[in-house]
Image (cartoon, rainbow, N blue to C red; front, side, top):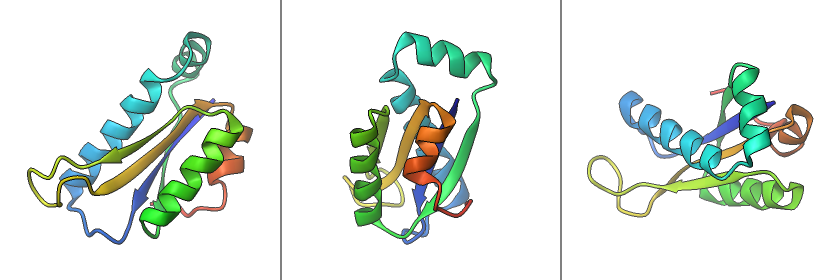
Length: 112
């Protein structure tokens, strides 16, 4: 079991902002995951990877692929209180799900 969090590299988010957006994405996708998969992922140590996306269009392409694979996923839009304009797409979480299926969606991306 694995979860991948994909972060836009074109926004220039500060370290704290990036960490908060990754946390939002992880939790949001987890909440949309079925009970059995949540339990399996938690039991296996909650494996996560953080990956790079070039921009918003890549985030939506990956979200569409996750949808087609039947994976839980969450696209995060910033509230706009600090560094970014309201509604800016920042991150995508894919999974938790079977590692091989998550990798079908995100396996070509570089580590952040």
